[in-house]
Amino acid sequence: MQDYATMLWSSPRLRLLQLICICGWAFAPHRARSQDLVKTDDLLTAEALVKAQREGEAALAAFYANVRISATMSRRKSFGDASPFTRQHEFYRAGNLLRLEFTGRISHEGAELDRTRAWVANKADKSFQVTRLGASGKFALDEVLPDHVQISDDIFLNAPYSIAPFGFLEMRVSELLAAPGVIFGEVVKGKDDRGDFVTLHFRRTKFADGTPADVPCWIKFLPDRHWAVAEWSFGKNLPARGKVEYVDDAKIPLVKSFHVWIEDKTTGLVHGIEDYQVTSIAVARLPMSTFQLESFGIRAAP
Image: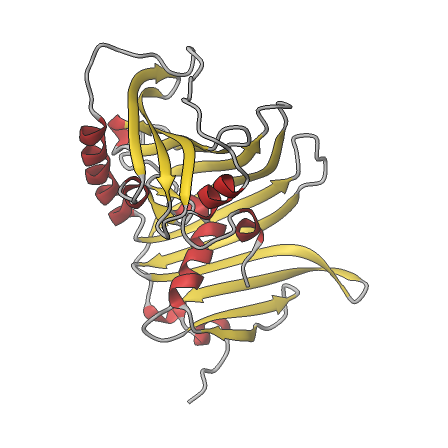
């Protein structure tokens, strides 16, 4: 049931970093361009940054724990791809209850029509997948999903905008920075058109399963906006890149767009581009029924 993102990130947690390691992308110290990162004389240790980020993350996670988000996803093989694949997203969250609907055009029995697929993670009741063909069709139950953790990870992977201010793919940044084998490097402070930023350089020397790794990474944070994530890079020759843009002047950073791509340092080409344009974010106290089969017009089995 995993979608395109899970083909890019091929194992449950830190799947991207493991892929980098398997491909043999050896570590080399990252040297950023001077116009991107400007060092200052102000001292900020990595440990102090991690503590501040964790506190900011708590505020961000609390806000994004009860939301409804509408977004448009566009996927391109490269910047020259004139026919991107697009889907409309509706994301719902109430704490650990998650629901993601995505609608796109498909060919079905010689006709072009909309297909809506929905994943629901509901540990208290049941997690499931349903599908509807055509805008006027009815939802049908595809399968009940026993692995609540896996479906939750898949939802976050396919709706990365839902945790982009404090997440990397399907996990929190604080989890990533506290993972075994993370070695912190330099902390760089600077300013760009979005204001002040702080970039933490680090590398991963092993994964949770003990597999050796040597992966250069950096994450750029916005310290004046609850330490929200602005950009990240993982890898050397073919780094995975991510960038988050926010609504200006919002008290809590509201995601405006999220972009992820693979950058080929050898050729300068960019691959696997996914763009998410968020059209609305609303704080919502969603009822339990939002995450049950009945909300799709399907009667639950007794």
